[in-house]
Image (cartoon, rainbow, N blue to C red):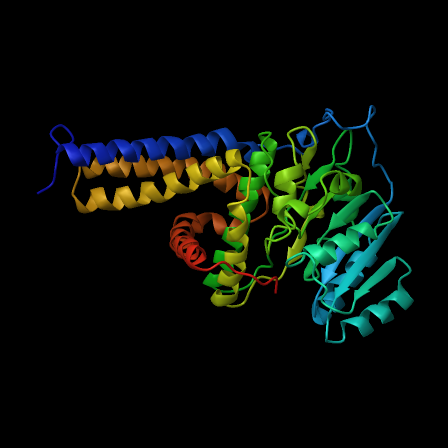
Length: 391
């Protein structure tokens, strides 16, 4: 028998109140945090106020030298496809450092041939896997140490720049006292539900970390499109604080080093790097497990905010399903759901539009549901056994 809102049993009414609390928290994140990206103007992306250890005067990055750093392990095909586009950027002074980390394919031969053709290319060969750091951190540290210039721009071997203005668009945000620039790296559009799911996950993560940075709470970046000062890397002692953790060469370093006043966000499509998405669900889940393993090492305030957002989202849907099955005043439940969807479509939909993920907007409810189920399973899997390999 269905319950009326005017005379519900105490337990169902309590669950409804908890549902409303989750709704309010979610709405607060939509309009208080994520809306910042939805209305973001590139001119407002750069903060220019000093941190306590910064120099007395700001450092301009207009047309200064840039070191692009890429780590590669058996990436022959990806380097052959993407590296020439990075080596032909419209920028006056830059170098491209490729750290060839113990590859046993023909990566060395390809890099040797490209070095003869492009004077900007600098190859660092690590023939043996003397991995003092876990995962990608050792070769990346070598690459950054080898950089000629103070500004390093990071990407992956399987990423291609959106065009020849990538370096200029990303590093142009280094004005004032900026030391870190966060960019976006969308996945290539392919056919099929898996591709939509992976792209939806990618853009959701981007909306979250870019919006938090715009709100003055930067907590992560992605190594597929990230820039920072080499001097900052050494001031923060690189990856020493988390060298035993498999992943985190990008997000854990940014979590440690990023501050409200030293971090800028770039959403210009010319600054994108496009990456190849995984082609199987298993490979994507393996990648997600590795990424999930780093979140427990974030600063407490970041863990709290991200945990609050994720927990209230899961709780909202669980409580909604329970109350609907309980036949609790369904008109009120549908009303709350519609209000959530309205906020979500306005804020998240507009943010997706800004990041040029137009085709995913209509799929938001379905993809969010699938993603929540998979992420819950990944979280449980990581509690049982932590991933240990970079590739």
